[in-house]
Image (tube, rainbow, N blue to C red):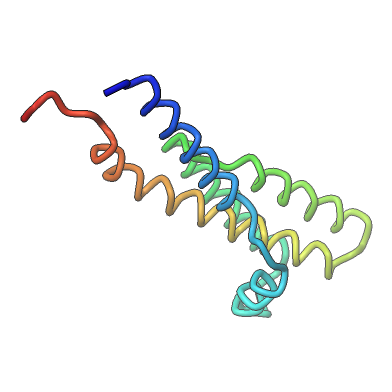
Length: 120
């Protein structure tokens, strides 16, 4: 079997899966998830939590760059006084941070199934 072909195929499949998981496909789904976050929670509290989760994912080498983009967008919206947009971006940051950490946790075990074994 051609291992280079197999390795390239697995790399392409992994890249496609990561890209498809990186951003939520519909804002409706994101909005409904964001509504579940306690409305009494401030934007700054959500951002703080998102940053902590993102740092934890970074320690596991699975932090998503999109999370940083959402954190910055939330901070920019806060600075301009747009609290609604800041809340949406902060919730997106928290959701993507949680997703990246979840991915890191799954990968701690799943990578072993993808490693070719020399055992028969």
